[in-house]
Structure formats: C-alpha cells, structure tokens
Length: 346
Image (cartoon, rainbow, N blue to C red; front, top):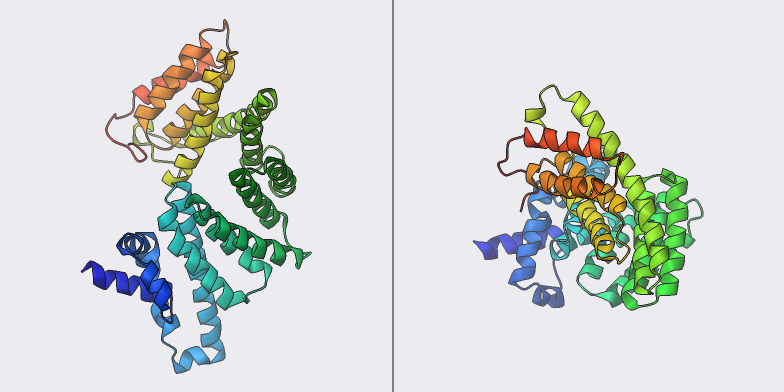
C-alpha cells in the first residue's frame, strides 16, 4: 500500500516523471514526508491539468487551466509555510518544490513571481542543513529581484530576511546584520514600524548580537519585539473576549503552525531574560503575559494558565504594577474554561 501511495505522490509532485537520480534519492522516509506534506491536498487538482482536453486547448479552457495552476501554487505555498512554521522541513520540501515547478510553468523561469517559491524552498533546505542549495536558491531569487525594479517591498523584505538567516547560519554575522537591516526597512515600508512582521527582523537581529556577545543591544531589540507583540496580543485578546457571547465556548483564534512559531520566539526572549544576571521582573511579566494571551487565543487553557501564573508572580514583585490586574483577569477567565486537551497541547 505504501509503495503505491509513494509512486502516486512522486507522479503528482513531479509531473512528467522523475530522473533516475531523483528516484534513487527518494527513500522511504522522504516518500512518507512527500505524502504527508502535499499529495493529499493537490492530487485531485492535478488531474485536469495533466490530462489535456479539447476544451483546455481553447481560450476559455486555457484561462481555466491557468487559474487552476494559480490555485495549486497557493495551496502548495500555504502547506509549505505551515510545515515550516512547525519546523517540519522535510515535509515542507515537496510542497515548496511543487510550488516552484508550478510557478515556472505559470509565470516563466526568470520573473519576480518566482521569488516566493525560491524563498520557501530555501527555507526548507536551510532547516535540513543544505546550505549550498540555499545559497543557489537565494542567488536565483536575488537575481530575479534585481531584474525587476518594480518588485514590491514585501518580496524584498522576505528576500533579505532569508539572506540574513543564511549568513547567520554560515557565521557571516556582519552580512547577516546588513540584510536584517534591509529586511526591517522594507517590512516597515510595507507593514508599518509597529507591525509584528517588522519586529521579526528585530528578533533575528537580536539573535546575531547575542552571538556577538553584545547583550545590551540584544536586550534593546528584544524590548521592541516584546512591546510590539504585547500590544498586538492585548488587542486581539480584548476583541476576542468582547465578541464571544459564551467564553466557555471560545475557539482557537490562531492557526497551530503560527502558534508554534510565535511561541518559540517569545519563549526564547523569556529564557534570555530569566537567565540574565539583571533579570527584570517587569519584562518577565510582559513576555509571560504575551505567552498566556497567545495560548488562550490558541485554545490551550493549560499553557495559558502556566504562563499566566509566571506573569503574575513576576508582576507581584513590583508594587502597583500595571499588568497585575490584566493578568489576574486573564487567569480568572482561563480558570473558568474546560481543562481538557486543546489544539496546540503537547
């Protein structure tokens, strides 16, 4: 059964067949990742595309086929991004590869429309440690952007963020900082200075300064990230509670993959602060409160309770702390929720 599914996966992910070397590379583990990562989502959509009809060769049929290819690209992009958020790089690889193949088919091999697919594939390979392949993919993406002066800020920000991550991984920290600075500039132009997207660049830059032993700079950047996320999550939390008639029936407001990514970032900052010799209870309270709101919105009352308790303990070390009351309110709300397993629990 597995062999049949694996062959089907290979046929769908690589329409037109696989070369001998590619078949040899597809061991059982990789084939299983193929199946989990993308096959179930795209198999039915591929049938009309891979089986030309008289209608599909006509003008209306051609337009419909192009729309189906665009839909495939978006599905593959979402699947790949979700797997990357969760750190499942092997499972993200087939979706990213097929996203690239469909993008080439739809837009041509040298247009700026290829860049998002290049970046997805680069990130998947980076997670697998294939840095030579990452370098190649990002070079292609950079060349496409250079040839397209009209390229938008969003694409440029993502390119520089990927380049920054590559340079961080290879130890070229000065180059990483330059790319993260460009990342922040383009992200702020697209999304605003106070955006959670923009502050992702600050977080990555802080990681580089940490590696360089420049802790005061890292702390300053982390402070910006903490403030941005606390403001963002507080607004989401208030809106969520106000819009729900029955708090006992609250549903998840966050995709699990997004939860994992944001949780990892916030916990990194919390650990940094807790391990610092100058541990600031105000910042511990702020970050732990972020995590408590995040997991409340994600539907995991146990994690929300745990981080909320950490936040409350830290806030109570400072007389008249302005977060104490909001944290207590969150804890009271969480304690009224069911304690059974929720999405995101592990």
